[in-house]
Length: 106
Ligand SMILES: [Zn+2]
Image (tube, rainbow, N blue to C red; front, side, top):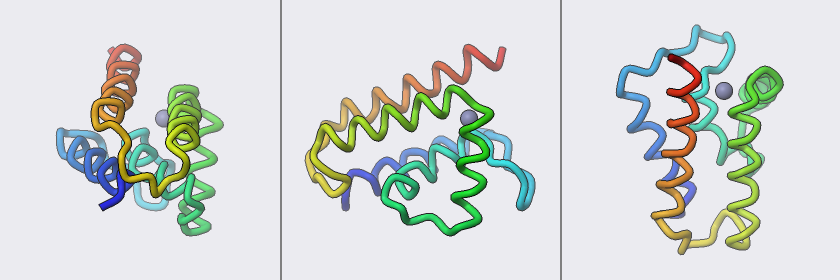
């Protein structure tokens, strides 16, 4: 299992904690963007998902920052397939993102 798979799994697990689902075919919510970010960076999204992803980015500075963070992390570890990204770093990214969300949403 690659670390990107692990990250996606982590995001999906978080989503069950009552995150609002996006309307069908509508705009992404931040939780969905988190799920899609590795696919986006690997250029693995469908055209529709990619468009929704980019539309969300334009309106959400938190997710833009998150994407840049993820991109930097992937570059730092030498590619998305790098097997040994420190799980602590991975967890920290997720926590940082969640904290940003909750501080904004109150
Ligand atoms: Zn967002």
